[in-house]
Length: 452
Image (cartoon, rainbow, N blue to C red; front, side, top):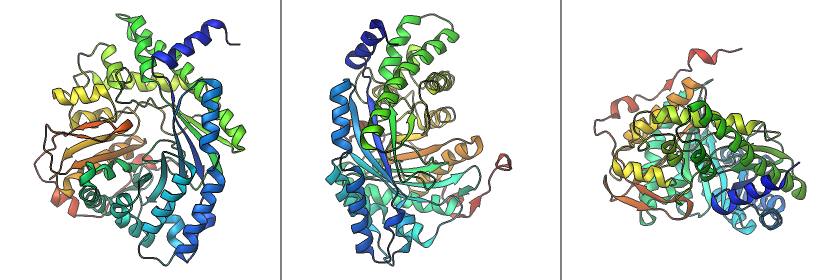
């Protein structure tokens, strides 16, 4: 039973410490929408999404009002479009992106994810068509998000796809240059992508999922930061226990919202994703949590160890608070979306190499990082390959969401707005990776893939 102290504590978390439900995401299978005629397929996609998610936003708003828990985003994820579009005879898949955009807007959601392809072992003709269409698709839509899975522990890394995506990211940056290359903020490249991720830009509805599903992503870096103020000078075991207890309380709020949304929409509950998702707001930063543990600035020596402690404690505390935990579940470190990360990058303490080391122990990877606009496509591909290798070898999800800031150089910044924040342009190595990337082929799966 909740007592008065628990209720008042939760109210304080919401009103003063930035506790919110970052997203309620409805996953929808579009496999039944496949058609050799692209117009008919797009009509089916629009109709099915609107039928399934037409009440999603209103239901979430009702829950917000009744329970007093802010739900920042309402989103939709769909079956990877490369699978749905494979039956089509079309050469250009952009109409599928337009259909998603139209349906998402009709439902009133913030984003719709699933303009995606899974190519860890090889590319079908449909996969390649979709990947090559990404720059145009993200230019002519507003709320569509795209993702490509290029590697896995079981399959290795598809370096042909990695090489292609370096060029695709650069092309997307150029096509959306007038909007600070914002198209790249809606494109993420994965290794070991999960099928139940509620967060954008990487959400898609996996083929192993039900017809429809409700997945919820919680947040609360500000709550964790404030809880650590009570254990200054304490040993790290005390820090870990404090974070675990806090993560439990945060996740209970997510479980409540997930259960209510599932019941009211008559859609099965999927998972609660425990990931700590920061925002550009002061007091809602993962970097500041690490600094509260005793680091002068995020990115200095000890940062990776502190992040490992945080990630582990969040998972241990949250897993007992929900009937089903999934997605990515850990701590996100998107530079542009985290006020503390931005400050550390501007100070020069936080660099891409250090971020890469941090991704070995946290959720996802190199996220929302702006690089100079003249960065070669092969360098982008090499960054993706490095991050995919970390995921492949360590049997974890890693990803890259990098933004070549056209016309900008190291030390500049780009304003992306809203939750996407402000991205300082970070330096990359000038030495070329072109010959390595142009080899193409496949990096074989590691020995630990042989688990059967």
